[in-house]
Structure formats: C-alpha cells, structure tokens
Image 1 (cartoon, rainbow, N blue to C red):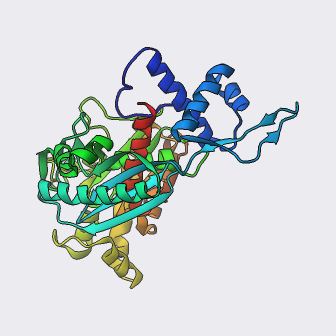
Image 2 (image 1 turned 60 degrees about the vertical axis):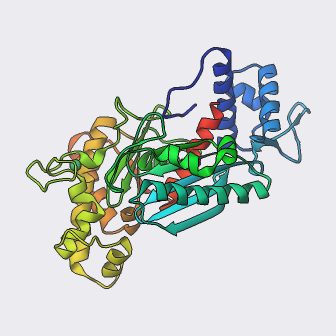
Image 3 (image 1 turned 60 degrees about the horizontal axis):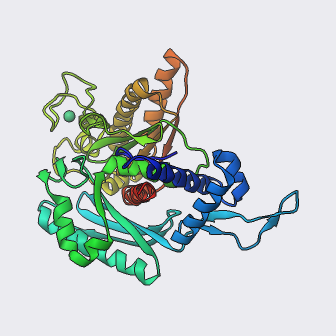
Length: 398
Ligand SMILES: [Zn+2]
C-alpha cells in the first residue's frame, strides 16, 4: 500500500506504474526472500508486468536477487528477492530542543552515518546554515560509500505548510512563517541542491513514520497513533496507509486537546490543554514548583533514581493525564496501536505505567476493546529516522 502525506502526484499510466512499483517494494520489504512468482500471486499483477518492474527496480538499486536460487516444487529455480541495502541512501534530520541531528541510512533503515550537535535554533538563517553543513557532510559520507542518496527531509517541532518548505508556526523554536526550506536549499549551494531534494515535515509525523516504515513487526498495525512526549506534545496519525494532515495541516495537534477547561493557561491561548499537564515542562513544574528552568529528562531521571518521591508522584500524575489523553484520542480513532516516543517516554515507569493503567481501567468501563501500547524503540533517533523514511516513501511515488 502506498503511503504519503501528500496527494499522489500525476495521473494515468505512469501513476499506476508508480503504485505497482510501490506495492512490489512494500511486499519484498515485508517478506524478504519472496520469489517473483509469489509476488505475482500476492499482487494479482501479471507475470510479464512483474518481470519488467522487478528488473527495473533491481537496476535502479531498490531490490536485489539472492545469491543462491532455491528449487521450487516443480523444479524451476526460485530466485529470492530482497531490498538492496547497499545502493540507495536516505538522509533524515531533526531540529530538536537545543540540538540538531542528521543521519544517513539505507532502504532497510540501517544507520550508516549519524551526527548530533548542540545548537541554539532561535535564528532561522544560522539554523539553516548549520543543518546544510551537516546534510552535506552526511551526503558526502554516503556518496563515498557508493550510495546514491535519494533526498533529505527535516523533522521540525511545528506546523509545516503543505508545500513542505515553510514552517508556519513552531512555538518551541519561537518561529512563525519561517522560510526554512528555501534557506536550507540556498545554503546547500546550487550543485548539491540539484542532486538532493529537501523537504520539511512535522516532528511527530516524522516519528510516526519511523515506526510505520522501519518498525520491526511484519504486519503493520493500523490505525497507528504515535505520541511525541517532550517539552511539547503532538501526534502522528496513520490511517489507511496515509499520514493524516487534516484540512489545514493541523491534524495531530493533540497537545492542545482540552483536559481541564479551568486549568492553567497554555501557550496556544486556551486553558487546560494536555500540554500543560503531560509535557516535560508540566512534569518539571510539578517537581520544582517553578515555570523555568525546565528540568531536562536526564535531571528528572536522576531525581527518580535517587528516590525523590516528588519526582515519582509528578511523573505518575502526568502519566494518568496521558492515559486520559490516549482515551480521548482512542475514542475518535480506535487505533490498533499507540507508540509513545519523545524524551519523556524513555523514562518508562512510573510515567508510562500510570498512563497505561489509566487507559486500561477507563477502556474496561465502557466497551472493553483493547489497544496495544509500546515505547518507540528508535529512542531519540525516531524523528530523524522517520524523516529518512519519508524520503523513501516520496521516492517510491516519483
Ligand atoms: Zn494549548
């Protein structure tokens, strides 16, 4: 199934061909070692179409044939197909709180290059220049290893315009209507810009793709809701194989769902948003009694390890509110899976335990349906890996 957060480009036979190519790559990705005849059976496409498309995908570097053909029951050799992890590369980046990260990976999501640097990102131009340097370095590293890099994508903690080039609003960075895409392309220079398409996407949506595209499971859980839990709270929602954008690109702004109408004033202007109760900022305030400075997740973990009861209670309290937030999201979407990511999710117990217990207790009261909840296993790389995954999806549809 094709997955994109934009409408599929083009129309007519070329679009059909792209969808068929995507279906083949998807199938081989989920079932490494599959033969051409099994691809024919599972896709319903004709033998000659599969033969031509598989050959094309092998020549372009998407697929490779196994070394040792096995004999089938009727004696004809079956050549196993798998994704080629040695020829095509993807670059993913993240603008995170106080730092920039860029990584390069192959089609299997295996990381080939990774860099993370501290950076004060208040200024759009200096952020674009620093990111461009990191992206150029990653591009050169992968090219030196003979990878052809398909493109780069940057995860940003904010709302991105539908052209995937401007940041409409990023409160965590203090940006509004920032032309990051244009500045980034200018900083990359004309030669690299031609070879390397660069796009922007929302941090929580990028992170959702890390699980959806490179997650370990062979069957995709859908709908999938990825919750990004840090100084801000957002979601990436995958339904029917597509990342949900909503009417104005605002789908997934779950940090601004109201949990307490008379609660604390949120940065968005409303009162009692989930972000005022569940975020790292909220946990820090519960522990220290102060708005600033916000405790880092390492500092919170340190207090927890030292047996600080106040830190444990603050996390449990925020966790219970997170459980309610998940319950509300679940009522609207009925997801098969919640994936918890971002720095707070890495703290595990008592934060995550309290959330899951609250969710299960409330679900049990009503319709007894269940939902799986797990912690994102890409840790702090989720956004950058997911941004790289978005490059893969876009390239498949080209
Ligand atoms: Zn709000």
